[in-house]
Amino acid sequence: MQKKRAILHIPHTEMLALKPIDEWIRAFASEKFARTTPTEIVLPAVGLGGPSFQSEVHPYPRYLEPPKDAKTGRYIRPFDLLPDWIEQCREINPEMRVWAFVNPVYAFLDGEYTRLLDQHGITLDDNMCITNEVIQKMTDIFIDELVAMNVDGIVFDLTDIYPQSGSNVVVGIQNTCFCPYCLDALAAEGYHEGAELFVGPQNPFRLLLRVDEDGTAHIPVDPEWPATSLLNLSLARGFIREDDNQAKQDANLLSSYIQARSRVVAQSVKRLAKRAREQEKMTAVILGDKYLDLTTMTDMKTLQRYEAVNEFWTPEVDRKYVLQQQAQVCVYLWSRATYSINAFFEIFETANTILALRGTEEFLKRLLHRSKRLLGNTLAPGNVFTAEMADEFQGFVGIPLSESDHADLVNLLSKRATGQILPPEI
Image (cartoon, helix red, strand yellow):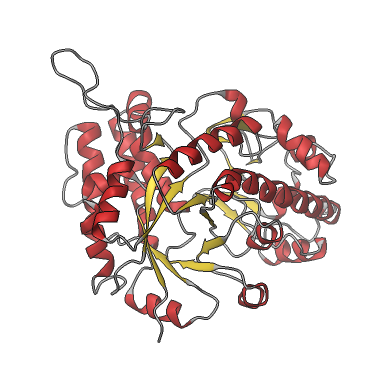
């Protein structure tokens, strides 16, 4: 059986604080995980906390401080890790393709004028809008800088760029984004109703979202499904009741909105990747579902139709569609791809804020809760073997994160934030 692409993903700088690149490569190739040497590697370039290199946009990750001279108090040198990592990869294997991982949530930015805006006019603290022209132009700068470092490709994480979910800010469902850029783009795609229809308990998204005590249940959808399919699926899943007299009308509204939104997001992603394409770099996106996930608000089919990027990394696909369209797909061997991983590493970047506002007990509670999200890893020999047999996949993407790495990361953060390692029983 011919070997396919084997992509090692290192999604966060803290993984490289835990172990160097060569150790992650050995772990990936071990009997526990892929049993093959990676043909490609993905390095953390721009994360939630900022770039891992000296950028014109932002000099270093927001939650870290570069080393300082003890006498003068000045920075010893710029915080510039990524060029060193790229050089290490080239030395380890000159033939290994090197990707730069960019999460366009850009949580390190604090400007309200670039944030997502919900249906109530409230901004989301940690999510920027990729339809905003300022964000698009800023991304151009990042890509120019990454291309100058001689990376082979750019991969964008789309798993949480437009979250529709429950909220601790508003009662019920919070929808995004309704900033001026999004409203103009939605109108250009035929949706003119604005945000008002999504306010209140009869929010049409109740057909696809249900706020429970332990989180928000959701139903991924295909934008091409008719409104009747949304209605029937919502009834079958128990999100609405048969005596909901407004449900049919709302299903029609929701269908037209989702179709317009998926096109808007696809065009925004294409704009993000534009500078990389112009410089003949490979482009990819990470998706958490084969359908339109309600934290992404677009899907592979729509992105493919707009030729937004070269390839897709996702845990599951519509096999018939992929083969018919000859879409370039690598299976991501983690449940919902990077969605849960990002949620865990976000704790690293918000630790100081949580400690200051909520105290140590609340911080440890959140840390332990989020750490459970690392249990979705499906990088294992059997899954790699079957991925290589599946003709719809060009290869696979995985993170060789073991149970001991999981514990070490939790202890690393606990010690850094509170000065103590968690008790072994915890």
